[in-house]
Amino acid sequence: MESADSWLSQLKLRGSWGQNGSLAPLGGYVYSTDMASAGIYPFVAGNEYIAGARPQTMGNPDLKWETSEQFDIGVDARFLKNRLSVSVDYYQKHTRDLLVNGATPSLEIGGTASAINAGDVENKGFEFELGWRDQIGDFKYGVSGNLSTLNNKVTYLHESLTRLSGTNFHTSTITFFEKGYPVYYFRGYKLKGIDAATGDPVFEDIVPDGIINEDDKVEIGDAIPDLLYGITLTAAWKGIDLVVFGTGSSGNHIFNCITRADYPAGNKLKEVFYDGRWTPDNTNASKPRAAANYLDQYLVSDAMVFDGSFFKVKQIQLGYTLPKAWLQKAFVGNLRAYVSLDDFFTFTSYPGFDPEASAGAAISAMGVDKGSYPTSKKIVFGVNIEF
Image (spheres, rainbow, N blue to C red):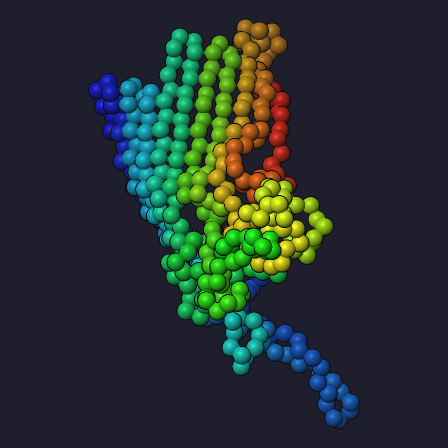
């Protein structure tokens, strides 16, 4: 709806709903019932042998598509002769019948269990966008920003499972898929403090039995951000143009897995192990002593989980478009030269290499930093020519 009033230029209400299915996790025919060779069996007569066979995968005749269903409602508005724009959305996305492997087959039948529809996941939140653009003489400028909230939770897990294992660090599993928690949250020990007498780490005994073991592991963070945001600034004056683009997140955590206890001589981040460490002269320490006991537990505790919030200036680009009168004799319609600084500035408290780190593309490895090479800073020069 457009308005003739000077303060309201346009108003639009939107709504959408849809479903789509996926079989992506079922590569390699993991859903089928397969037989495999299993040893050679002798026959008495003639000294002959024959290859045997056994079930390799159990199959699952009740398997369904993995279904994502999303609902969205929003409003777009423009004010002051389209100079001010505002958009607000609310969304809900439910992923049902999540396809996973990892169910334990019956002891009587052996073999490997087929994939099952094991879980449901809910994502919901708000999205906001605000923009302003204007012109003063030959000078044009604009600023726009967006912000999204995200609430993520596993709402169902198959009754045969307590939790699904995700990514491993050395000999420990550190991410899990479990009902009531964010997707593949971090699970580990809670650090109680550093023993002032010995310099060894002390952990919370969640199950009060005087023993620190797997039963004492709890949620210690997750990689799902509470907020995602971005900002874009543009300006142009007589052929000169400037674009500045930045993006960031808040509320997400990073599990730092750069150091392993079985590599005692390997390089370590000084902010994680050296600064504030226990020494005979510093017994009120926040980090354990060198070669402390219980380092295996320490490296899979919340001491290794850091705030992963960040803001990155992804691009600063300055360009110049030559006047068309200069180009006519060269039969060029348009020529623009530019220089760009990409991924040059990062603002974060995370002590690792890159707050956008991840052990891999898999969702089970989100926020797990195993020393992946950080995003490179780039200086880019370019020319756009139109004939």
